[in-house]
Length: 188
Image 1: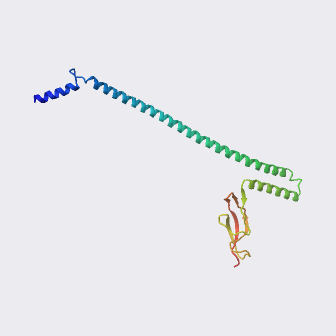
Image 2: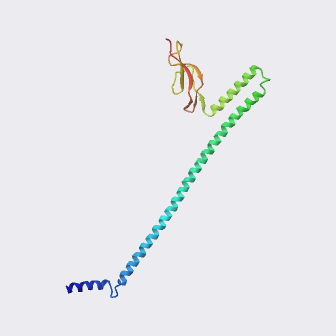
Image 3: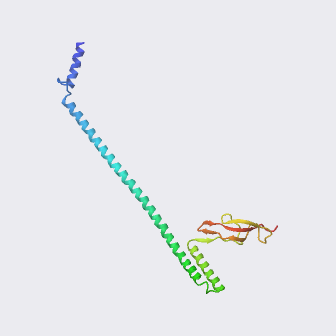
């Protein structure tokens, strides 16, 4: 047993000097390891701070981009409205002129004025892409026409539009308002 105690004491002597402290080599290795870990921690903290700052800048950039796009869209819509209203103001000016001189116009002149205003309004609408739906004599199309009545004993083939009750319009390829029509049921 004394032999084992001597071996244990000899091993301890290699690692711990007589005063109970670790030897200088081991202490400096631990200090170097701690310094290295502290350096890595400081670098990780700096990287985390940098990444957070980048994240905040990117969020701000995305938010600014969104706001800029919303402003551009609002400006574009506003400019389109202005252009459309300017076209309609020309028509309104002509209506006001016609109303101003209505007492001096005879029936024929008033009718001619109304036809001109109607033509001018149609031109404004057509320039904006609004077109009337063709009706009388055309086959009924549920995407363009709203049948409000079926006409019996018509000389037109079945499913053909015989009368228009309300004009319909398309805006480009899209139906803005279907035409209300009366449709033939054919000869009975």
